[in-house]
Amino acid sequence: MPREKVCLVGSGNWGSAIARIIGANTAAHPETFEREIQMWVFEEVVGGKKLTEIINTTHENVKYLPGAKLPPNVVANPSLASAASGATMLIFVLPHQFLRRICPDILRSMAPRCKAISLIKGIEFEAGRPKLISSMIHEALSAAVPVSVLMGANVASEVAKDEFCEATIGCADAAAAAAWRLLFDRPTFRIQTVDDVAGVELCGALKNVVALGAGFCDGLGLGGNTKAAIVRIGLGEMERFCGDFFSGVQSRTFFQSCGIADLITTCYGGRNRKCAAAFAKGGRSWVEIERDLLNGQKLQGTITCEDVMTCLVARGRVGHYPLFARIHEIAFQGKPPQS
Image 1 (tube, rainbow, N blue to C red):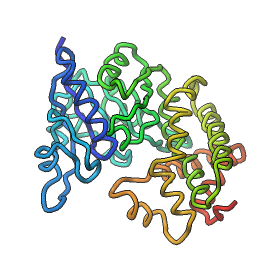
Image 2 (cartoon, one colour):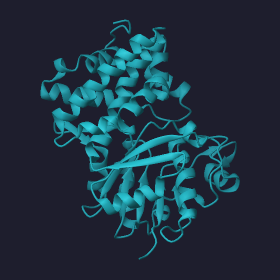
Image 3 (cartoon, helix red, strand yellow):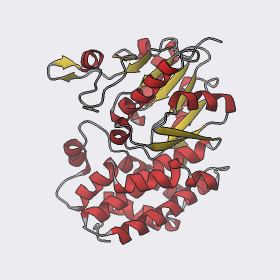
């Protein structure tokens, strides 16, 4: 059996943190994986030097994950077609807005027996209903490419420090699930696999909307009681949304790392909570906050919030989601955060 060739599509803070994990695992399992991992990097100039050259020389992504060393077998590549050439395992970890633009280059370069996994936390909207990012990747690449998802309570900076955490892989095929688990599982990054792809992915997206509400609480100086209520109500609306728009989502998925654990982590840390706290204090728009606080990263919660509301309006279900609706009103319609 030929060895798997891994390509990492994306190199932000989460992508760089994941690169440390998979770089160690491809080196540890030479019977299964080619040692070298190609990591596609959108080329930027940092301090007068190309970011790819910095990464390949210092083995550190100085812009998005400073202070965390990358394994030397992770090679930064500014050419997506070159990075994906002959890849049998594709890992997508970049803002989903760019997917449709980049997938044609990947399709022309990847190996015929390729499989993919999405670490992207977001959803799209199409024809009056939500569309999974994994479905977008599947359609953009090939009907023959199975797409799994990995979600969990994973703050990139903590993962990069090898602090213990868990993640959930949603994968419909047992053999593919085993391959993905071997690639990602580490003593400090433990993987559980389930066959509920939609449930795992939706949890990863919807928790960012709830995190906006948690951030509003922090910006207003409210205490743990209020935030706990937001988390509890938010989890209920997440499960309701999954049931309204997708069949077969399993209740047990919400008790995996991708569910309640990720929701807690995101509501007490992470970029969406931080930016929402700044918004609640007033004086800056979302665009300004993203520019000032995220160092080039993208804020996913606001995008997902708008997409969720579009879905609810189209289905006539807004009244069944009082928390999601109020978060949207505060974020986009001028409703005071105190409401």
